[in-house]
Structures are given as C-alpha cells and as structure tokens.
Length: 335
Image 1 (cartoon, rainbow, N blue to C red):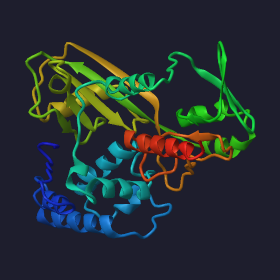
Image 2 (cartoon, rainbow, N blue to C red; image 1 turned 180 degrees about the vertical axis):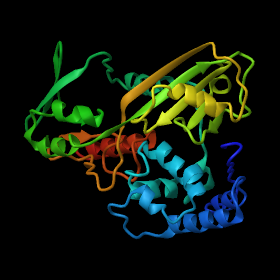
Image 3 (cartoon, rainbow, N blue to C red; image 1 turned 120 degrees about the vertical axis):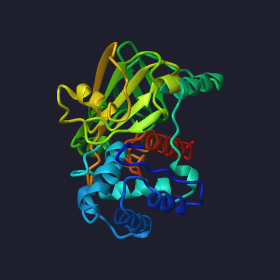
Image 4 (cartoon, rainbow, N blue to C red; image 1 turned 135 degrees about the vertical axis):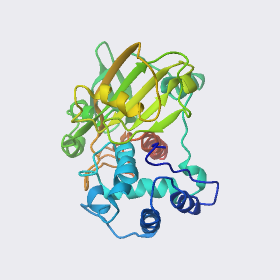
C-alpha cells in the first residue's frame, strides 16, 4: 500500500494468477500501465535468458516510469538493499520468481510479534543445549588455524579444537579470521572486494492513541520505503518505525522527510521522541556478476554459512537460512 498513489493486493488464486489479478486490479495505475506490468511480470517469471551484467534499472527500462517508481524499483531496494542503478537484475528476477512463481503463499508477508533474537537464535540455542551442545556467548573467535585433521579456534582467553568448523560470520569479517589458513586465501580475496550498503531505522513515538489502518505501509517519494506500526505488532502503542534501505546517501534530516511521507497518509500529531539508528554495513551491495563462494571451501574440514554464499537470493534471512542448512548438510556427509 502506498496511498494515495498506489495499492496492490494479490487475491487467493493459484500462482502466478494471483500476481496477474493483483496487477490488473491495482489502484493508481492506468490500464496501459496495468497491462505493461502484467506482460512484463509474465516475461519475468518465464524468461530464462541470462542477464549477466544487467542492472535492475537497465532490466526495467521498458516499463512505464510510474511502475518503476512505485513498484519495481521499491521492490528492488527492499529486497536487495541496493539501488536499482547498480543492483543485479539476475538476483532481482530470482527474488520475484521465488515470491510469485511458486505457490501463492510464497508471497505472503510475515510480520513477527517478537524481536528476531527471541524468534530464532534463543530457541536454536536452547535446542542445542538440550541435545548436549555448548553455546559460548560473548566469546569472540579471533583467529582460526587448520591442519589436515583438525581446526583450532582461538578466543581472547582460550582455544578450542574441532574436527570440522562452519564459519558463520558476516563476509567483512571473513578475511581477517581466516588469514592463517592458506586454503581460504582465494575466498578471502574475493570477499574483501565486496561493497556494503547501510540500512537506517528511525523510531518516532507519537501519542498512544495513534495507529495506522494497517501494521505496515509502503512510502513513496522519500528516503523511507516503509513505516511499521509497532503498536500493532509489538504492543508499543503509537511507536512508528521508519525503514530506509540502500541508505548510502541519506540526508541528515531524513527522519523529518520520513515524517512528511507519513503525513501524506495519516495525521500522527506531534512526536514525543525520536531516535535514528544507521547500520553502515547492513548487507553487501548485490551487484551484477559478484563472486559468491560456495559453502564448501578448499579445506575439507571448513565450511561457510551466510547470506553471501552462492545462492539465488540476496542478503536476506531466507538466504542465510538456506546457506546454513546447506552447509550443515555438507558437513554431515563427511562424518
């Protein structure tokens, strides 16, 4: 929803008919724009021609300007956290296919009611302990060394020796961590060339009686792409969270501009407090032709896991999860 400019909802029809019906029923588009979007979406889902070095802007250049501004380019920024001018068209196509080319529920948007730590890491750690494992918190691994039959992890206070290791760190930390392992030098050289994109989140507390009509709205023509009503998702009445992806050129007054975006669709009143958080290296820049390493490494006892490893999707939770499952499966095959 981007009221008053644009609104799209996909009905409960088999995929990809739900996307076609959603595009044809979209509010804020002319029939010419709807048909152009439907034809292009059909091509997007079925054309397998290689896109190589094509960017999303180049890929979408035949689409009407309004569709790019309100639909395709916002989808690119939110999914890839990379501006369409430099984002990989191949990965963008894979994301659209995954969301709209399978079953209709694959495009469902799930909004958690708990923070992500409580949703994923805490239950996973609890499960590991129940299975006899050990979870060491606040024990940063500073270096790895390897022989043909074991891997040693060094921390500030101790060292640990294991038969196999899965390295699940952000890509910017991989080269330094594996500097003592010759077999991983080539991977380190690839990863060190990555560029990164920030994500900014702005929290604005309005009066407790203010709420949006829905827990999430897309925002057009401004620095923020989305606003979340945390009163509806987390019980924090009146608290809005603005998200600005690919925020490498964010103006200093971006939160003022985001509030102005919100006022196009609602009247929130005077804010009581505000806070802006910018994660400078939130994700890697998902550019055409970037080298993404496989989960297997040149050392048979070391595996990689993370959203940067080879796969269809960009830097997302889905990509990280798939990589972790793939890496664990590869390790288990050697035991």
